[in-house]
Length: 170
Image (cartoon, rainbow, N blue to C red; front, side, top):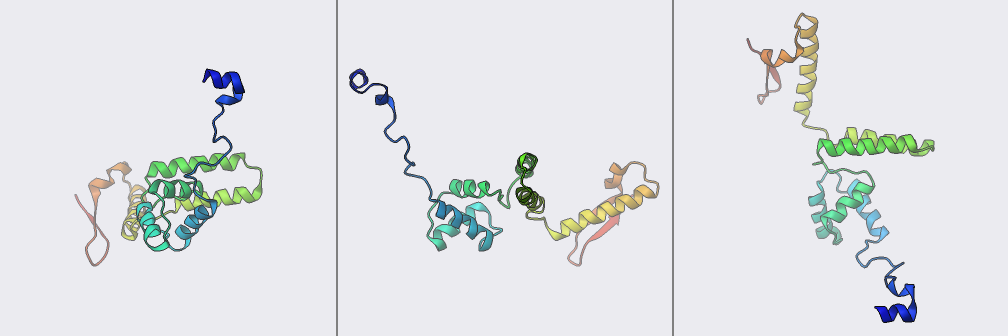
């Protein structure tokens, strides 16, 4: 190393691959294809299954981490994403929205935020149960129930095969 420094100088210590793309870089066309396939053909699948479908049907051989990172760059979350992941992404988008000056970018970011909020809704029965409990809570609070947190003492949800019923307990 000392002889190399004496012969060439400081440029001897510069890495030989400087300025070149790494060999494991995924091509931009492949990345765009992954995003397009997820948004059109395989929307709603979790990322692990999507990666397996890419491998089987589309002959695109990439790892799950590549799929996750490519879709994360487009602000696409897995259906199995945790609440904290959605919350963090929403915060990141809010910061981007505040820092942008373009109206077009602001509209696109707002659409992404709304997509995150509405992403992969839960079971329709569970959603209707939540709406029903909210209505019941408002009704009972207006009727003289002083402590809304005691609703669990009064109501128990039941979901028989015929539909959704809220039964009263004492």
